[in-house]
Image (cartoon, rainbow, N blue to C red; front, top):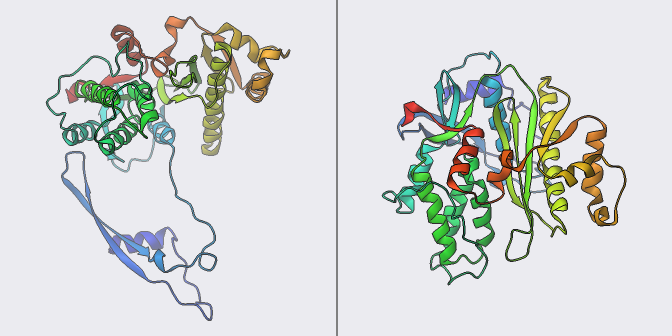
Length: 377
C-alpha cells in the first residue's frame, strides 16, 4: 500500500482541493489482487486505491463515460520497436495481458501457450489428436447446415476465447471470423469446425509471432479478398496483413458489410481497409516522434483493382464504391501509398481469406513470422 501511495503522489494522479459547499466527498477503498506469472505462480501482490464510483451521480459528479482500451496492434508495435531501438532497462517483461514473452538471439517471440492449455482443459480437448490446419478444405459452413448444437453457451465462450488468441495467431484469424458469424444459433457442424481449431492449436501450442531486430522502418501490406464466399448472403471476405520491416504487426480477416458486384470491387474494398490501417499506423508513429519511410507499398493480385487505384476515370460499374475509390486515390496521389501487383501464389493475405491446402498454409504461416521457439518445444 505504501508503494501505491508513493506512485499516486509521484504521478500526480490526484490533486488536493477544497470540497465545494453542498457536496459530499466520495469515499475510497483499497482493492487487492494477486498477480501471477505464466506458470500460475505468485509473482507479486498488488494494492490499488480506488474511488467508490457507485456513489457518483451522472450529470453532477461526471458527464462522460468511457472504457479505456488498447488496440492489439499497439502492443505488437511496441514489441516490434523494442527489438530496432535501445530502451531504458526496467527489467524484462515475461507475461503481459495473457501474452508470454520469450527472448532469443533471433528476437522476441510472443505466444499464448498457457492460454491455449487452459482453453483445451476447459473444453475437454486436452487429449485430442492434433491436425495440420485449423479448417477443413472442402467444408462450406453456413447458417442451417445441420441440427442446432445443444450447448450454445459453450460454443460462444469458446469462440470468444479463440478471438483473444488471434492477438498472436494470425493463422486462425480466418476460421475464427467465419465461426463468429454463427454465434446466434450454432449447429453441430459449427461446433465440429470449432473443435478442429482446438485440435490444430493442440499441435501448435508453442507457436507465436516473432519480432526480429531490423534497421528498416518501412511499412508494406498485402491485401486480398475472396469474392462472394459466404454461402448465406454472398458477401466477400477481406484480408490484409501489415509488416514493419520484417515484422508482422497487424492483420485482419473480416466479412465485408455489403455484397460486392465483382471481384474487382471486393478486392478494392480490401485495399481500402489496408490503406486505412496504414494511415493509422503512420499517425501512431508521428505521435511517438519516429520517422518512417513516407511511402508504403500495398501488394495486390488483382490488376483491375490496381488500375482503379490510379485511373482518374469513373465507370458505371464503380460509382457505387466512390468513397473507397476517392480515399485510396487520394493516398496514392499524395504518394503516401503505392499499390503494386504480385502473383496470386505470392499473396500472403490468402491465409486470411480462405481455406488453403496444408503445404501452402504452413508456408504462408512461416512467411507471416509465425514460429515456435526451440526452447519452448
